[in-house]
Image 1 (cartoon, protein in one colour):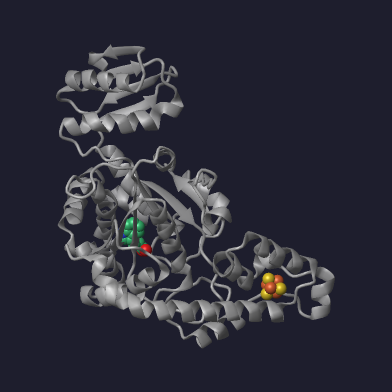
Image 2 (cartoon, rainbow, N blue to C red):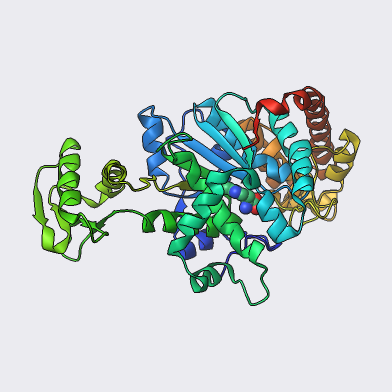
Length: 437
Ligand code: TRP
Ligand code: SF4
């Protein structure tokens, strides 16, 4: 199986995705006051989250970076991502949001100026209306940020064409702007750790699982540029190996003194093997040793980037049962839909109800196959008890689709009405968020 970030496929077998791609199960237990998407398992997977959890536990600064594809209207499925960003902002994270205008040019043929307009009117204004704060937050355009593009070229040095094809399935006909877009995303994800931005920090990229290929690429390239490789060796020891050919002895000496500050003391250093064995370290220590050694790497002129972490959320089913997509207005509710339109669309959504009320009472409804239930689950109720109640009464046969839908449709109309009122004020605040370089 291959995940194609640009295909209109819906990936729904989350357990298989985890197994096949080594995505870890995401546990929200360690988050302070987790937001509903976390509590309800909608954020289902992660890579490298322990670095972020550690920062949260120790009250250390961390960065959230994510991006938006400005190629269509923002719909309620896209809202999930910004809900998470706003949550992380509320617990103190610094926020970077990339507008993927280079990607939308390469992969969707959208001119940069149009991308800018769509990004602002459809996304940024709604983000502000939803509660994103301007403090410690910047929204930038890929095409305007030189450091992002520089990193694309520089980090791209360590991946070749055939590896890119293996990840993305590019073929002879792929245009080069498209082929280059993933590297621009690598630049997006890594650049906040440059000194001219926030400097080295744990960094998390919350995204939909379709973006996992880009995360694998970015984590791979970040790791490839490391000076040290910390791993468990065949004889079950934890070894620190220098990956460069120059300055090896000094790198090993510096690594040893740095690891001493972490509390390790049982070392064996073999210059000829470019190796430092740390006998009192265990496998669980590896990510933390890695992060500590980044300081040595920087002292020696390397990037010293923390490996970016990621989390993955599920996708909402489209209202008509397929994928929710900006290009199919019936499948999605746009945040700029008139409240009445949003209400109608909710009324037309596919349910998990039975053919008649009688059968519904007898066999119960099927909330697991019901898009209306998904609307409640993802958006319409904050209250977990209420959600459970909807689920149970549906399954138990005492809840009927008519009133259940009408209730959802009213909540949706209200949500749109309130959001759109807020959007009016938000329009004047856009400049507080956007950085033009
Ligand atoms: N590729 C993303 C999308 O299609 C947009 C994006 C660009 C992005 N840069 C990013 C997402 C950095 C996360 C991080 O939606
Ligand atoms: Fe869906 Fe509500 Fe009908 Fe249950 S009662 S199937 S949740 S619409």
